[in-house]
Image (cartoon, rainbow, N blue to C red; front, side, top):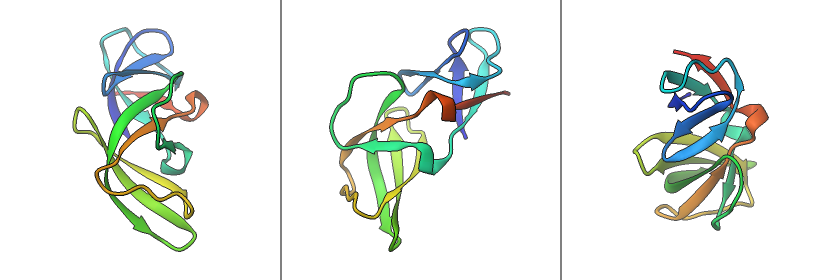
Length: 110
C-alpha cells in the first residue's frame, strides 16, 4: 500500500509521478491508498519513458534462491517492496525506475 493524492479521473500523484490506476478515485486532491503487489512492479535498471514510471533508489536487496526481494525508496521517502527473478541483481544505492502496470494499481478511498 502506498499513500497518494487523487489527480482526477483514473490518476493519482505519487512521488512526483502520475500513475494511472483502476478502482474508485475520489475528487482531485483527495488522499487515497493504492494497492500494488510487490511481484507486479517491474524494476528497471535504466531510465524509461512512458506511463506509470517512478524513479527510486535500491535501499536493500536479499537473494532468496528463486527470487530477489528489494526494498526501494522514492524521492519523497516512500519505501516499496519489489520481488524480481533471481537473475536480476542491482546493488544497494543503485538508481532504478519502477514500472507499475495500471491494471495492477488499485486505488482505495482513504
